[in-house]
Image 1: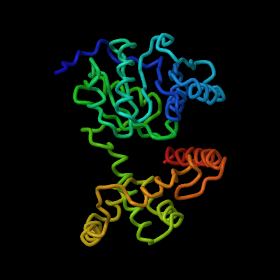
Image 2: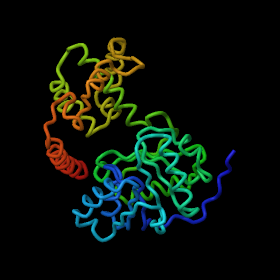
Image 3: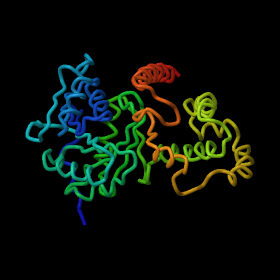
Image 4: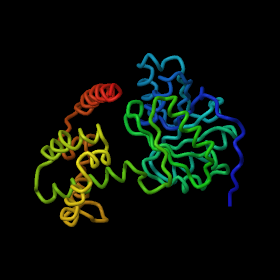
Length: 307
């Protein structure tokens, strides 16, 4: 059994960050830290991915001076915190995390950005899992406020506190889970919602565009303002209980993936990346949509801060 060491140093503001993985999420994490005054090194062994990340960050005036791009651990300097953000694959992440631990100081906070992989399984390869914390960012990571914070079974409270302090420095709203469950919180809710959406499409109740409109302009707006539980309080828990007593039995409760989803993927309909999904995505439309979505997110978040 691994015995956690005590942390070597008290918390001090983070100045030097290392992002491992220069894909979309890694690029946005680097942008987030750079925009908050940190010096950032981005490491990726794929030169094409690294170059795309460099171009994206260097086009941002806040990122030009303090970003460094490297493809080898020997080029990595001192860092206070590591944000590992490679592909969501347990074996790959474990291999990368072993490399991280071998090349950073004993007191360095190590965060893994994962959507739902087991923090305990990821930490099995680490000699010092007490400073290892899960951090589930949401794309675009530089904009979406909430970050789920997931301690492992060996994570010391001190390092959880350090992770929370860092995230607050970065302007985030850290949400610490009391226990780790598959998918954490947000993805469990998101997949429960998506399971019912797919079932509705399979039954032919509405088409994809109508379903999206219903969600966006009704419960979607309410969820953004109140969250699900405050909204239930506003509606009345007795009302919710009455509805659930007859509705739940008709909701989808399958434990396997949707046949509709499987059929789409089998046909090569992967969404924007393939040009087809629930919608058609002509060449270039994805980039235009990203810009529009980003503008709307900025405006929405600005209004939420005012209230």
